[in-house]
Length: 337
Image 1: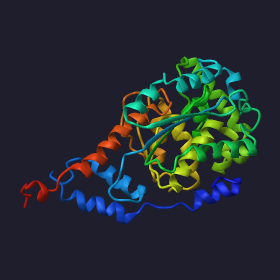
Image 2: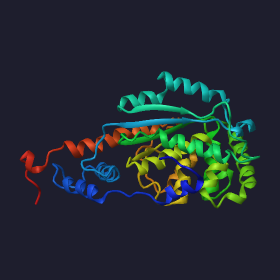
Image 3: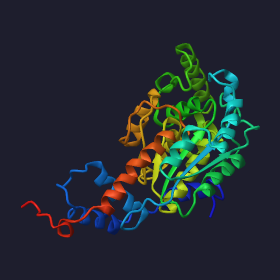
Image 4: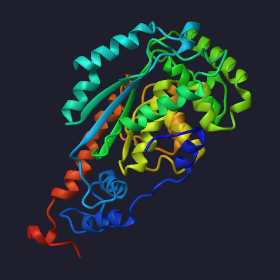
């Protein structure tokens, strides 16, 4: 099953499978019997319920986690919005494929299968201050790259990104979806100066003005103002929902891609948790709009899915404590009265 058209994309965003309440309830019922005071594992207990509900099974499992990274290049880089040249995207893809990036180490450490998907790196998107980032055909291709990248056998999914200039695109998407101007959402990204951040804000405002006529439609916002890697992440997140796979969201760029789904259907990200809050200033505000409380705050701002991959350790802990702990009866421990 793939996304055949923009209308099909909207239909798949509208007709969303829900969590399995029986599986979630079974976790809560077993949790009440385990050798600990009620609620003493805090969010780990909540996460175990959440994982089982979206995996639609009890007990929940953490056997085949998947980390997949999408890479794209952006025409807006011609406007001088990044501290690095677009060639770095291609160079980093080679580093991912060679196993030399931070995300490779973090995925390996938690036992996750890793893949990277470069999307037409020699053909950047259009400059969003002048035209739509993607044609409809390119948009659908990117959405389906994300959809097809999700392994049906995965039990937890992390999506990440690589794309020089994409923090500008993420800030632009946030302004388009949630309001405000470039100066409300632009941040340093890969390390631009305060003057560089101000320049990014100007570019964002120009793009908002150029595309004012489509800002009411989140699906078109992602096409006109996004990028191939952002569309692919959105496709993967939606595919995971239809394949009963919970998702851990990464940083500002990943969450900006996910935000288009949320804006179209407020329930679209119920199967997602925020792995962390990054050091990019707009990410805090974006998570508030999404209603997501991050699992970690380590001041990371790398992208690549790195913060979310690190948070997989917490989800694994939620599963193993729930499934591995003994009940009061099994351990011969007296329960509190």
